[in-house]
Image (cartoon, rainbow, N blue to C red; front, side, top):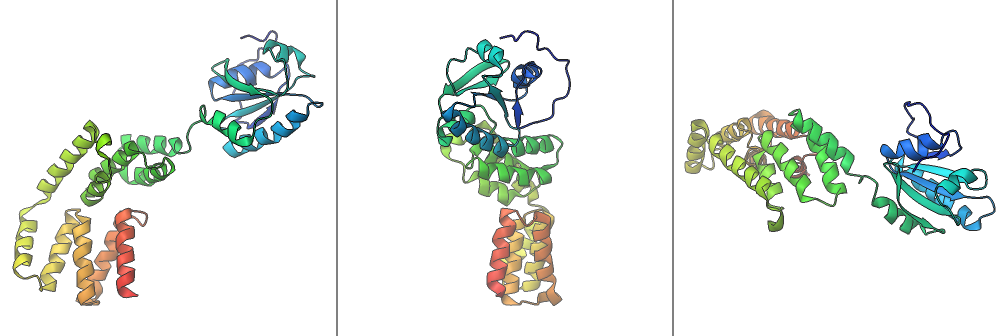
Length: 297
């Protein structure tokens, strides 16, 4: 579709939420902008009662989505040439423009829920932006900063398995094997694809590699003297050094349970340091913070 005598030179267009269409800006906002994001075109008139009911709904959604789509308002009386070009025969008429073409729309004043349902087909999901940011960080091997964004996307997407697998990958990269295993245990069998199998294999290899001679010796010594708190503390420190945070925290919590001020508070300091390394938003950190709080208070 072309609109005669409306071409504008290419320029950077501010990310507006709502714009009134005239002959001067029609090419820019109705056609060109639709290659960047969906453009919702609302044809209306002052005398049209249903138009006055629909417009506040569209304006509300445009402001709510904050530029995810552009609401282009066309006064069909003032801009008869544009209305004719788009074949408008009744008001209100709403069209969704994408890549220079109308791809959907409706006539009449629909309820807000139906308008939302129509827009949802063409607008990015709320979780796509943090997911994109997280994947960029993962590509740069910044797994620690990617994790909070993945958690946000995971919750907003109603816990998509594909995002959970990315979270597990970050934990594997950070040697947080327990967290990775916990996430993989939530993946349904129907979602256990080649990526899942790859992560499972990586975890198995890391667990095997983590069994250093020092760790094996301490585990054997602890098995023979489970009441020795000093030995148990050394084992917790070794687990921490190997990034095996769950067993480290479990041993430290048990030590604090038996002797709250063990080694002049060193067990509790180490416990707190591991929580800080994990980050307060980390599920493992949240779990053990609660356990410590329950134990102490």
